[in-house]
Length: 66
Length: 253
Image (cartoon, rainbow over all chains, first blue to last red; front, side, top):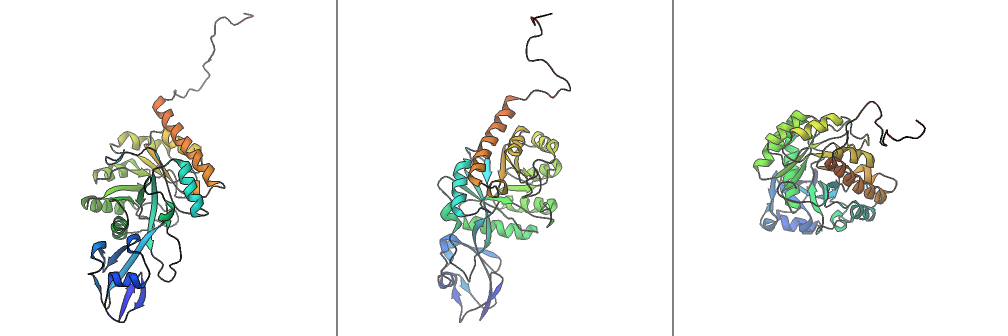
């Protein structure tokens, strides 16, 4: 299955929880914020949210800016 | 004091464009600021090696203000603000909705709309705006916790281009006025404060200086000096001289 992750095509074998996706990407969930199909995902719900075929996921963090 | 929260410094500094994270941390220290701006960007999925910005910010001492820099529509700015709130520790946002690529001037119409939406969602909104007293008044009416008029285009270092407008904005506003963008050197920051601004926000003037840490200290002094000068009440400008020494008792007359 294919999802759009940070604007790019990303392949997954099967639906996966958001927590699972972050672990697979080696991203510390405490340092990021996630939007799933345009809705903000609360951090405590990462294990329950399922990323499925065609979903759009944005994972952001803080970088230097003015 | 903004939205009931007290800051000890009237200088707000950025976290972008420093030669290194270590220099940034030293400059932050030298600036005396207790609020820093950060940008919200996509995590690099393919390269996770980069160290985190937050490792170099003393979050015990520094209040983190996420921005919506780079957003060209109200919708994108609103989404970015929500992500920033989720990634961060507060519901504050430096709201930017840019209307033009070359000048990075704000799109005031979209900015006001985004302010209204985010205020309804419980955000403390600090909008980056033109040095336009009418736009500032509309932002205030939309619920902005402060207004942040530009002194000059972002990163231009041109200094305060329309001092009179900043003064009028100060006179009109019931919320804090923070001059955001355009500062090039210490005297620009001092001038902003002398015009009555409640604070100054800058990034490039410090980060891009040859010696960022030294410039950060200069800015700390400039903001303090400008603030004191404003409080002291400057003398009026006159066309001609008025002698400082007594006119009587001069010898030889």
